[in-house]
Length: 585
Image (cartoon, rainbow, N blue to C red):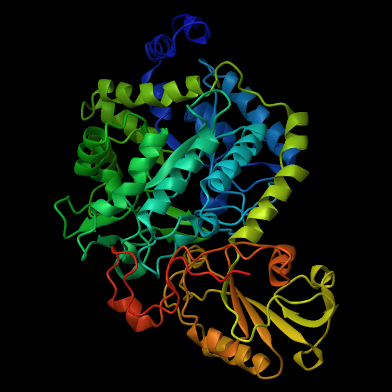
């Protein structure tokens, strides 16, 4: 092997020159490794992880030394000190390779309350904020940009440099499971908040202090047939009976204007349009024609996770999400995605397939170089070649600081939306006898006396969550999908408590729910989008203003949902509460 020319390490040179110098020295194996980004875990005590059978993950050493990969999605977390130390160990391992290409670490959202290993991570040590749908309930660009800036500072402190968000899909299908991470169903609001989110993470332009944003899911993942999600074969179809394909592009136009560095196409396949009926990650008309040519996007396009090979997740086999081309081999799927114009394969770790495609002549090596330049350019722009390590002490004092936690809790209060207050039970005065369910009684005791039964109470406060159907596998049940009606036992229980004492129901709305039976029984109903008990009670007592507004409409019935068009916003007949509803005090 020839001696390495270190020109690419000269920070005084233009980034384009550094990229060309590095690309010219890379072997095919080293190039291929850059095309794969998959999950990685933190080992015990911050050690580099061994293999993880639960998610079919090889060891960290296998990834970096054998497969020559340098892009990873961090699954789970740890305290800030452990995360920072682990990150530095990982960068040391990467530095030991022939070219020493630094690692880029990405993450799903990890600042809120939702925990879905396929889409999000609980806040843990990070500051706690409402879900993105809660930021939409606040509706304020300044708050969203402030969140993005705080998240950026916490991410960079532990070495996270790529955000697998924001999610600017329009929540136009009330049953869809992914609404919690969107900004709701209004295209203009989603675009404004999505752009503010990107500015918070990236700054005015991408640089050494930035976190790169991977905006998703192009060209809009909301119009799901029957509200099912294309993580699973029964949800693979996106439909446009209202002919609103273009509307779902509007938030992405705002993201492009804000300078988003990366784009993730969704799994779904368009049905009944002029586009090929294959998943968007394989769709040349969408990625090259629409994204590259119409919008002029020259950033990184990374597929959603698991398009090429089957995976065992939590003990169950889940097929590759190669919708519309299921009959093709992994090799053929990879070639089709490359031909479509993608730069990187999310959730995959099979560079041997790409190497074979090049060596066989099916994919020219020059095609790899086109994407490789984008992938390496971002590493240089983020400053990873020049300063790959983080300051552990800085991570400890930054992540979850008092200032950041206070800002997050303020946002939790602001997002809470008072839907009904028919008996004027709100605001509650302090010192009442309170019967509560689903809440931390030790916190509730700061506001009144907690009692053991509704019979003893002046007011009952019940915290419940939007309903969902139980599905066959563990992974499916992290995606709350299916009917929006509460089970009989939930409705009956709320009614029975409300028959004894004035009852306030707090509903966590990770998607809309059929709330009419709850509203009919309860004295007041409040929607939350991720809030701790203290934030809730500050709102219930009126110590915090009632500021939240619904980011989607609340349908009156399942029949109205089934009759609505999945691609059209505000389309359920006679909704119980319209978009923007929220009482004020």
